[in-house]
Length: 193
Image (cartoon, rainbow, N blue to C red):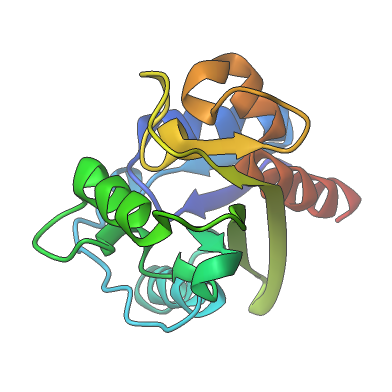
């Protein structure tokens, strides 16, 4: 029997990517599909907390098996900043990627240790039990943006083993990204179940 699972997002690209990885054994639904139009507040201080807040909200209000993710860029020289605050690093309303990048590059000016990592955490609630999956990609922060693909910090993040940013790597990014790695672990777990 096909398992129904809610992915706590309305991001069509994310849904398509995860659905393709899950195959036909799971029927994946978005927040829109279940009639959830609430902007679920991400009030956690860690990626793990935020992912779990979103998954718990769906489970408690809709009674459905579900999973949610949260992602952050963690820079070694900045003690893990921007981390859980990656999307709103520059402050202000909404997610201003350009302002976030500018603030990051300003904070990194003159810094020689440019090591960083992108980290995605997925919280899954299945049959009332919580499971977590993590995906990490290590790399470095460029001194200026390159490329016009991707989103967020992609123009300034150079993954290990490459000499171009995520924004310049096109489809390659989707196969090596932190989200892809976390989703792979989720898919392996669901296939075992």
